[in-house]
Image 1 (cartoon, rainbow, N blue to C red):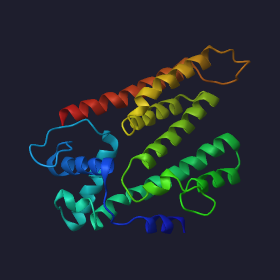
Image 2 (image 1 turned 120 degrees about the vertical axis):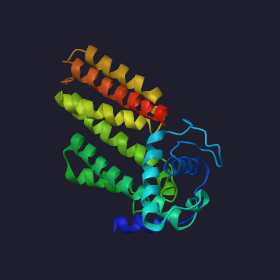
Image 3 (image 1 turned 135 degrees about the vertical axis):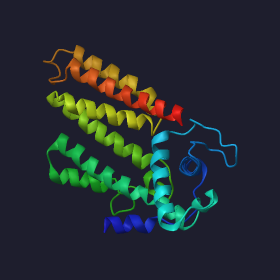
Length: 238
């Protein structure tokens, strides 16, 4: 029922503004092998838009082309191709719902509270707020993808802090790196997170019991930095 509702909200309406620029950059990447937001040649490489949504949308363009053939860029901005491209939102809403359930379960150990939290974020359903997310199902912004990465990174970091799990810190760092490549603001917020974790390590454990260690913090930082470094190398080569 929920998936059916999501599908019903996606139409072939025109993709506009920042979402259109993301899509155009993805089309250029897939059709011309260059991450460029130019409408006409010469297609100059650009790092103006975050790369992860562009890479994923370029994959969507590739899949559409494989089924119904390639077309001019404007054909993807409206109509059936636009609707097919927007279907990726359904995947990210589903991932976000699972992540919300998991994160809430980690904090509450309640299946019912976790299920309620997962249902609550689904825009348009009964008892759910119709806000920004509700308006963005039928377009191509990055909020669903960014929220999915954030919720899983937060859950993994919570486990690492609570139980001292090194692998969870590494996984959280990797996801935070991908989040920074999805929403650039993460790059500016992340130092605050690392500073707070430093403060956590400095506090006496009797005040705030936890199993977080320096190893987890270093692993988190290195994994985060590695994703950013590899992405920059890839972009420069393109």
